[in-house]
Image 1: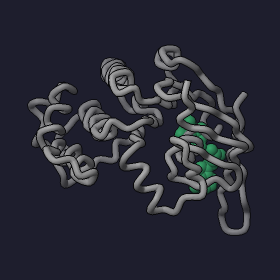
Image 2 (image 1 turned 90 degrees about the horizontal axis):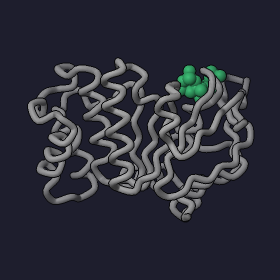
Image 3 (image 1 turned 135 degrees about the horizontal axis):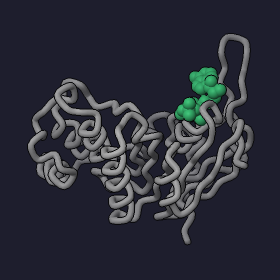
Image 4 (image 1 turned 180 degrees about the vertical axis):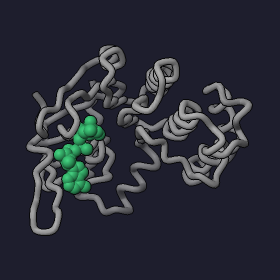
Length: 221
Ligand SMILES: Nc1ncnc2c1ncn2[C@@H]1O[C@H](COP(=O)(O)OP(=O)(O)OP(=O)(O)O)[C@@H](O)[C@H]1O
Ligand SMILES: [Mg+2]
């Protein structure tokens, strides 16, 4: 199997004033193309920090990250932004939709940024598949949490990214919505042959992944 993402001896320090805390303490990890990996661990163990590193939203203090055969840990902010918009979809617990954009606009924007011709039409098709046919022109505040997360997931998958990073995407949702969201994530990862890294406290979802890794105090155990 092809390796899509490789972390080599990754460390991350957060600096506050004159103190520096090491939150990721030397992680080695390979994720294959199309592989689904669950990340579990206690609060504060470093799961979100790991996702931020994988998505190029944080730079490692040391070590190397190779994504899609490129050493992205040495990339500039602009290069990282390009990689993120073309190849990586990120979903958070809080949905981070653009508040003054409708559901349709939130999804079509990413397609437009990537130069897709019929962005609106593609965005609409995706949202309809996600059960949001009657919510296309609603603004985020007019949508339920589950609906907002479906828009966020549609947005993260619109460009068929090679990797989807999801940090507790069902953390704010009831069980019915959680089931729907995880189903969409798994189905679309399969369909697009995207790798999926899913941080979750819910073992039911973690067990559906190909592999589960546990983080404890900034290390894989
Ligand atoms: N910007 C920051 N500055 C300093 N410390 C931070 C920062 N962000 C996170 N931390 C610390 O890093 C550690 C790991 O945090 P992280 O958010 O990765 O944990 P987590 O496993 O995602 O936890 P949770 O399950 O609660 O989301 C924690 O001790 C946290 O306090
Ligand atoms: Mg977290």
